[in-house]
Length: 418
Image 1 (cartoon, rainbow, N blue to C red):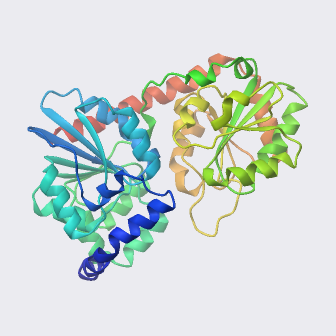
Image 2: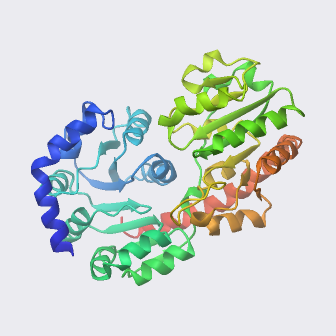
Image 3: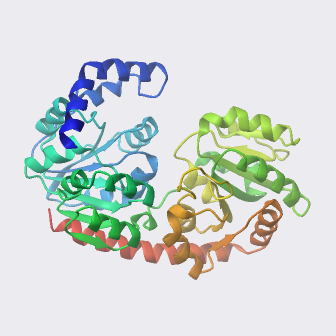
């Protein structure tokens, strides 16, 4: 199977520049930095020990920041390279580490042998760490051939992806057997990794429970927000925004100063969502125009990526989407950790297949509540809005302690390779 995968990537090589160029025209790639995906590298490696972290997108990037910032303080480590794929992750990481000479970001090259060879020849990492479920066969096998230690951190293998890998089990064993260490994020992934050929597997829990202190954005120090009752609906999918709009109207019967913050999973749907909510006679303001927010605003619709944290910080409870809709695949639910570690009570629908173990842990501490319709959603929000601020602090403290233990254990494991 790997033979055919490698042949395919070689055949794609002549088209790769054109492929990325058209993606750039569609604003799916950075207009200048997209060439990094062709292994055109303008950054200097420098001397000394270099750790390379690879993440896919914003969620994975944010989850690994506590680990990155911990290792940035290690004297032996001279450089930390972070690679990512998505446009949004590139913007966030570039902005965060723009003035940091020790931590660098670039986009991961396409998984074509010519590009992966140039990438590894330039950076010569002393340790490579892949996050979550980021598997690029050519890159991984070339890294292994160079005898560079490979670690998979917070490994998450869903049932859906496991069944796909199982169809090419020998190929899977070649890939997952290349990792020197796999740190699973849950028991299910630990079991799947073993079947797929991973050798050295540890399970300390999901690193997304760990946290970085983040200050509230200056834009949110706005009297129109601070004087209001606030709840948030995050990672919402089609039809769930309408349900949240209807819930808002019911909550407003109890709290006239309610503000509902909606963070859709796909922000390109923002215009459509505004139209749907306006048909419910709701006044909607986009986060990109937050200066227009006033006491009459019903819904603040977030239309940019990577901003969930600052809205979770001012919300007492969060409804997490993709849980009240039925999907055609086995995937359902969204990860509740980020909202929980910021002290929010989690409200969700019955469809949470992807994160069952996490929800079970949170349920033990009464941090989650399952609902099945608009009436239950609105009643649950009203109930949480009645709780004092101390409740939010208690939830945050539980998750903080749990997350710190996980982070410490992961650090101990990784340090063995430094």
